[in-house]
Image 1: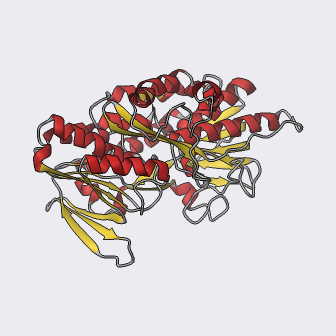
Image 2 (image 1 turned 90 degrees about the vertical axis):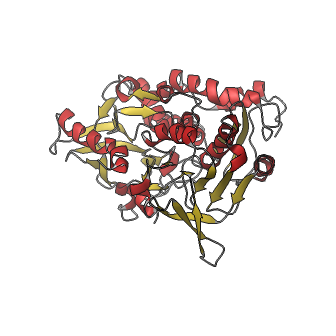
Image 3 (image 1 turned 180 degrees about the vertical axis):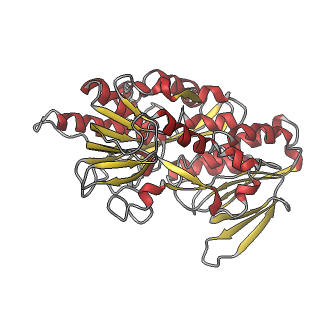
Length: 444
């Protein structure tokens, strides 16, 4: 079997299994007070909190996947620092008991009729809808990538199967050209493409092959990082470690037979630059799922992102629809940290609305996001900021733009514990409530 097909076969199997598992397949409709599309980081938080508060039968969650992933750990999995098992749980163990798990995927949303059509033919109606379906990888938007992925040093930490190959290929690397790419278009966790470069460079030193290696980071955007405070620190790291940074270089093709990557230079020239590789970590282009991209602007913009008010995450036309996480149009970095806080805003406001609390003050989202940038196996630059203003919103008492062992421990060890023990149960709403203790003087 073609390796790249095998890497992405799981989703097709999951869809087929959902039809067999669903006794209501074939058009019979169910109805819920609250319906969530997606049980990822944002969706599971909303589902858990509202299901526990509203009771059994009131909240449904549409999710075809059989596993739930804490994807921020995949950089450490790819670097061989954490086991893959630390990043995954069975979905059946994550979906709250009081919620109804609908094991199929959404294929369309009719906001006027207040119903969602599923891949198995069923329609599900709702009073309130929370869209949290994230982004999908579009491998075929980089020519040759589907055929090359998983072979001869071509890997990606953005897929649960491919991430297992990254440490293998890193350990097999004996020197030469090591490339790391980031596309020009929006992606989830936009710091991940470069932090694997830092960890790989460290591994090459540990393995004794750094002296005969070139490590190069190619980004389709014009900055190493969007926030200047952290960008300055990252430039220091890259320069100190002799990592070549090439901005405005967007990967457009991979020739697996020649082991050659082609980049379009986005400086107006549209020049194509070709580069040989011995190892390449690819960040694929991404987009919202097809049911949003084909919604005909009822729900989403031209790119498929659900059009929401950036402070309330409420749809700009249909006030009974909300969107959180990577699939929303909110102009902030698409990270798990952002999804956590967006979910808190939505579930709090929605619960008050359901109970008819008209005098309750509505929570608003300030664009908070966090992008912890691993720079070694014991140091991290902890970028925390508002994607709306570009201003740092740091939770800790020290300068988080500096490489820190404490920041590494928080992200690599503490946050996963919080995620699995609190967040998936709807009990974690972000670090802001602890900030008076962890950053009492509001140092940014």
